[in-house]
Picture 1 (tube, rainbow, N blue to C red):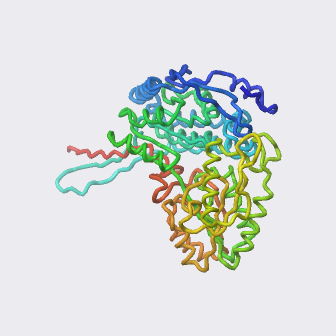
Picture 2 (tube, rainbow, N blue to C red; picture 1 turned 60 degrees about the vertical axis):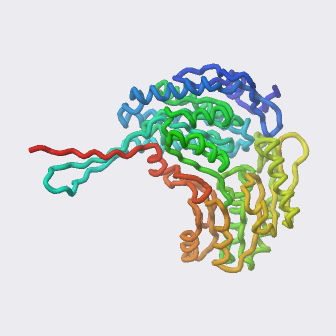
Picture 3 (cartoon, one colour; picture 1 turned 90 degrees about the vertical axis):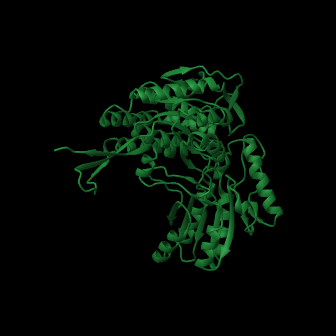
Length: 498
């Protein structure tokens, strides 16, 4: 194994050195898989830990534990106030272990430590605090049926959906786990969580904190391994009532196929090719900075990354020059370098995929204004890239690259901006930059996207639902809609006798 970065805390070093086991029925059990998977530091390309993946028997045991805990009411039968206290406690423990969790997040994910410490960890804690507040507010309603001749009372109830399979991606493992676990627990569900095999460290540490917070045995189970084995087993098992998945559209299709035989409830938060629409009346410097942050943040490995930047022709050259300067000024570096402004991509394979798409776009006629090359040396770094004149049929314009690659295109008027912005199979997010309030309203109404930001980009809030149109997914996360994804609606009709 490679030596760990010198700035890591003793707690993080000890955790990395320990065996990576599965959490099943409140116990940390040795995985049954026969192979070994490396935890690789994307900043160096070196292996920092290794683990055996879960076997299908491990998955079976985890699902059985979740099923038993749900059926016996170990969690869902607690009072709402008691569930709220324990969920709130998870948030407190995340805050208490913020340094360690952030270090783990950066170690196998490559995220700059400052971004993990100031962004991911606090957001994860906030997810649990926010959903703790919902526990005592999950309510139904009453109604008077309109059926003559009978004295009837109608009641609606909200009940937990059952056992939820949670499948999270590698680009934000801690916060993505929190965004799924918190509403599932608030609803009263039991869960089986599968993090990406590329980034397991912070999720496993979160599992320890969940146990410490007093969540009953078997309510939260964590199994590590590939989507092809572990994810597929969770999805196909009829004892699992719901799947909540964040990842690629291609993987979602496999999940749909695997689960169609037992008609699981599905929530799918998928890919995007989000437009950033900049009008010439916008505050251009702020728009340039916002667009740069929207595509170069986390090295572009964000589902809502603003990868298609549409600029009114009268402001196009100024924005193009500004984005080029932003890209050229970004300092690339390791996750624990305090001067780092953009970190690495997740893996060598992913970097090669990004590079192939950029080269193909240039071959198709795109102009490279900045970047567009692999960075020599250790780690999986790629230059922040700005492409211009990538045609509407270009791979860089149409495909989700999931890297630090911005494509620019001019437009003349609002109608053309909308046509270009909506010309995609995706519909996850968009942003509009203008000082004209009426235009902002018209654009936000007409854009076919689940999230529209005005004069900002990529800012989430736990109370505001996120999710996509078209090929960007099914359902919503966050807010009441995200909570209701883990609830079933029941109607009760009662006849009253005199």
